[in-house]
Length: 275
Image: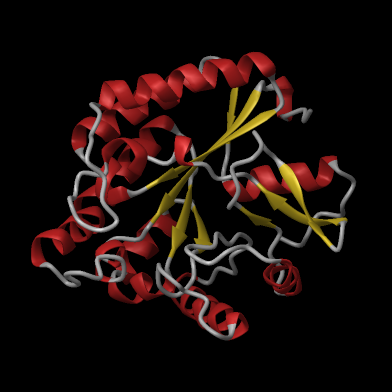
């Protein structure tokens, strides 16, 4: 069981996937580029992210933004503003679906180049999209200086990745649909389809109850996967801000994915990578 800074009961990270229009242009294969569906992704950039950034300022916390590098070329000022406000920029590939292609190394190089030229950052975390995480992908991440990912949901985290049956300095923060906002508010009736939507209050109540359980156990990680095109509605951003305030008042260590991963590596006896 992990011990967190200052005796905090549970580590909480809010990771925003900046998928935007790619969520439909690359997944809605029956009707790619549909104007109405694509507009929801645009909403995430134009309304959702600014609203989220303001809320995070009010709450005084830093978050992680997983950016498909293609979207950084479409919305450079939005990504610069995320970075300017002190949030972490993480790697989410070049595109959203099937993003690694036949040569993952080339994809890493191109995505890293775009993010470096735009913000001067070298990502330390990468979350795969559709492709399965493999030992070879993990080894490539280590070689390129990455030290965390978030792709499995079989543990309440954190967990060290094993390559060749040996633990390596690559932290899996554990991703699960339970912490993914699309399980609660994906309201576009197109592939991949969701057919239900919960109110902001219902969504946050579920997360609040889980937080209470994780805080009672102690030593856990809650790694939220959130999409600005959905959570970015006014009512949901306001509700998320209230949830963050609740967590802070009840023993949460709220930090970026990077900060949590570095703490885990240090606690496990690994030398901290250069920041």
